[in-house]
Structure formats: C-alpha cells, structure tokens
Image (cartoon, helix red, strand yellow):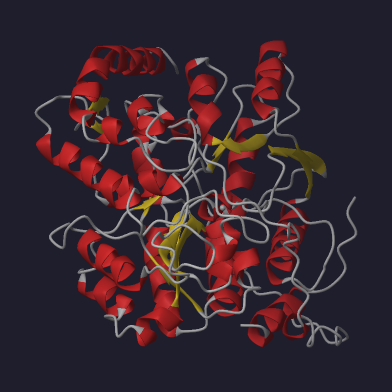
Length: 496
C-alpha cells in the first residue's frame, strides 16, 4: 500500500502559492519534474490541516466501498513529449505530480481501493492475450489511438456506452472524443480529464514574441480573438521575418532566420486546421470518405496550398546542424514560429526567449472555428474481460470528475502551462481555445490517409510532383480506401 501522508489542504496551498505517428523533436531534457522554489516554498507547515471539502460531482455518485481491492491501470511508458497523469507514488513539490498524488489519495481513501499502475508500450498484445485467456488483470488501460481500432474490431474492448457509471456527455469527458470516435453510436475508446496525456499530443504553434514588435506585425492574439487568424496572416508573418542573414544567397543555414521550424507533422496540423477531413460521419454516426473524389476542388486547393507553403523558404530545413538539432533554431531566436505538440512545454519553458501560444490558423476567416490536430493521442479503454465492469466504470468516472473539479485540471492548464510556460493573459485564453478545439483525424485513425502520410521526402520537405497532382493520386486510392473503411464499419456493427 502506498504511503500517502500529507493533507489535502497542503495541495490547495500549493495551487495558491505557485499559480504531448510522427516523431516529435528530440530533447535532452526528459525530466518533467520542476522543483522551482515557488512550487515548494509553502509546503513546510502541515501541522494544521483543514478539513477536506467534498466536491459536489463526487457526491452525485453516491457511496462505494471496494473492500481494499487493487484497481490495475495499464498505461504507456511516458517520454519527453507525452506524460502520464495516472498515478504518482510520492510528493515531489512539482504541481502536476502532487495533484495526481492527492487525487488518487482522496479517491482511494473515500472508496477503499488501491491503484496499481503498470507501464508498458506493448499493451495491445497484453490486452489481446489477457482477454483471450479470460485474464481479468487490467481494469482499464490507456494506449495510443493508433492501435485502438484493431482492438475494437477484434472484439477486445467494452462499449463505453454500455457502462452504467460513465457520464460520457459531461464536461469532464472530452466531448470532441465522444462525438468523433464513436461508430454507429458505439464508443470503445475516448478521453476524459482523468489522464490529460491527450493534451500533450495537441499540435500547437509557439511563437517568439520579439518578432511581433521588431517587425511591426499585427497582434496575433487579436487576430485569433477576431476570427481572422488565417493561412494568409500566418504566411504573411513568416514571409516578413524570413531572411538570408549570412549573405550567401540562400536561406538554409543556422545563421539565417526562418518563419517556422517544424517537421511534416505540421502538414497534418495545417490540414486539420482548415476544417477538412478525409473521413466524416453522417447523421447515423457512420463514417464515410470525403476526400478521394476528384471533384472535391476545395480539399485539393487546400492540400496544394499547404504543400507550397511548406516547401517555401519560410519553413526551415530539418537537416540544419546546430547544437542538438533543428529545433534549436527556434531556441536561439532564429525563427518566429515553432510547430510542435503541446507536451513539449518542459523544454520550451527553459529557453531564453519570451514565448506565446497560438492555435493553428483557419484556412479562411469565414471558417466557423479553429481546429488543432491531435497527433496520435492516448485514449482510455476498458477491456472486454474485467473483474467488475461497474467498478471499472465507477473508478474511471470518479477519477475523471475529481481531476476536472478537484485540482488536476487547474494544475495542468493554469499553473504548469499558464504560469510557467506563458506569462500573459492572452496566451492563457488561447490555451483554452487550443484544448477545446483538439480534433481527431478520423482518416488517420481508420487507416485511410495514405496520401497525406506519403507527402514527405528525406530532407523534410514535400514532393512537389505529389501535392501538385494530389487530386489524381487520391482518386486512384478511392476504391481501396472505401473498402478499408467499410470493413471497419461492418466489424463494429457486429460488436455488442
């Protein structure tokens, strides 16, 4: 049994005192722990603990006593851009770590159970073997979404809509996941705030604020707020700052200045930001192809433009040699924008530049909202075979509710990101826009986005012969991709 010793009131004082299958850029800093003085300075006095305040959303769930049973959560091994918010064994003074610790302590004591977290990146095979053998070891599990559809169609997962204790329409469940990831009104994986690792994989635009002032550019925050943050404005800003600093007649060195440093994940990011999808759903919740018909002129217009933007001098080449790699061009101040997943913030907040945060731009101002690409996020699932399906649902729901209302949500969004990474009110509002607009690429999830996945070349640029002729290329794939999607749909309709 874990030794959890400090009262919940200490966590409240901590919050008041200290107010992430495209690879992300590599970092030498894989330690998420942040032990700055401000997050620990008020933790010494624990002698007068205040009574714990019960949150209303837990009271709504009623009482439960699980008799000290172990609740086993299988999850991925965290890395330097995707972090686990499932369980922490001790207090460290780092705000998110301690928020997870206190959440679990509270729920374990209230409902009399013990969390056992197992990290393993080969979880798909583990779940298949366990379910096939009737092994009830795992109560819930988190995995990258790439492998989830095969577990779903293989019959290894529980339909979350059949789990009595899950309030899937509530705000502590990410509604974009509930609406996007269902098929035929069946839902086998989704996201809630119990584990906010999905946010780490939200594709985001970071920017160096100095360029806005130095070049007299429009205020990007005002553009976002007015709905006028578009491809045009994004390209204008990049073009304004990109220049040949070393005077060699080319923009390709570490001394030159670029509009953005990023990699081909931004191709998907810009595509999703345009509001387009290769796969959408009809009124009966059935996915269908939208992007493979040769008469879809708007989609091909967007893809062609993305290719041209990406291949311009505004986008820094990935083969630049500087310090630890191409990302350091942004760190040393030689690019205005940096396209990466949000979970990259621990590295960014150590840089000596003032950083702002933006959603990916709309294709045009008339677009109704912003969309930010989730690049292979984690999702939560319940195996088909568990010890007690009601218990699995109850504890997952309690973790989701308590995370949302009890402190973890604020620790993640307000304290760690909102104060340590960005220090202006505008970026804090932008952060909420980004998270609320996290979007799932259904084409990529269900394996029908081959054409987008093959636009890159070895030097990180795109193949012009592919994006200039993308309409004919995708039309050739329409029959095979339709068959792939139909097979998935039929398999799901046969599931419970």
